[in-house]
Image (cartoon, rainbow, N blue to C red; front, side, top):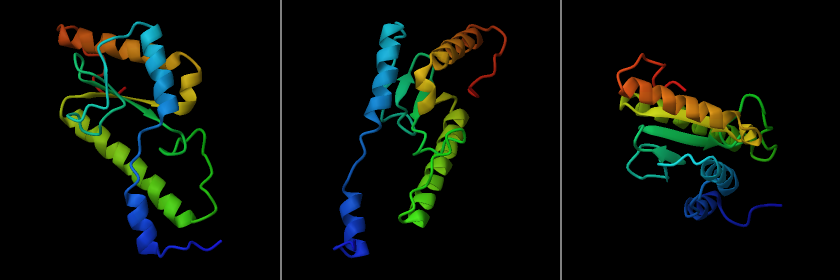
Length: 152
């Protein structure tokens, strides 16, 4: 079926659509944080580059929850749609480049960054990774030995 709009009209229309994040995956993380009594976070702070899904200001820790399709999970290797393949390849590659750029920017500014893939939300391993990272940050901040900084 041919698009009734010209490409510039479709582009202008789509530019008006604003994403609201992947609410289902964010809800799983938020619920898990509450159940596990992991406190001190805020969602989507505009003052932090990349507007992480969850931010722990006391630790300068940015937590991103990445959808496997949208962020190009190497394990899931979701198929690129066959319709408008070049568009989708360009879009998804751009998302991955932006993710790398934001991670480097945050690290340079002294933030700690943790990314969780959507498919990891089914187990609790990501919660243990988060707790471990917070403990490492606390040790470093209290003058203990370095535990790897923001590379988690």
